[in-house]
View (cartoon, rainbow, N blue to C red):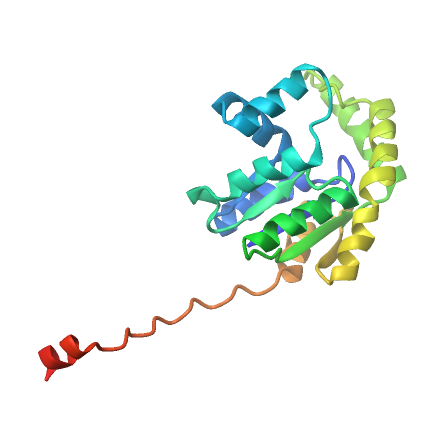
Length: 214
């Protein structure tokens, strides 16, 4: 199962990705984690990404795609993966498609968690109030102003991916404002059925085998 989860910040992608990982035995690939791991491993492409990140610059699409390509070739990705945080733009999606095609890999589905932004902001504000009441520390992005900026960036850069994947026939849209179990059920329903395992075809007998078996 090879998936992409789309949706603005706070849509619940992380929660649903964890459920997909647990059920299907696939891995979740966060672009940030993959880049940091490659830099730590000291591979040639990882060192190049590290130098760029140290300068505070954005890692170019071709380097990100190359690092993702390295990662999905590892044994733990054989059952599939969920891409989290990549692609963020249509050019990144096009580069990803080319890389996957070179490896004979196709995406099974792109799941869009569609949300109402006003309701999402109210949800975040309510969560912040609850966390403060419990005396829990807030994350940097637990701020309505920060969320406003991230939502604006999503609309500008990432939302066009919805039309891109819809045109390819891989997009599946789910109501991300529903309760978590309802969202999960909708995602399961939207996923393509798992292909049955291929039957093993007996190898043709060689002359030696025929002689031994006769």
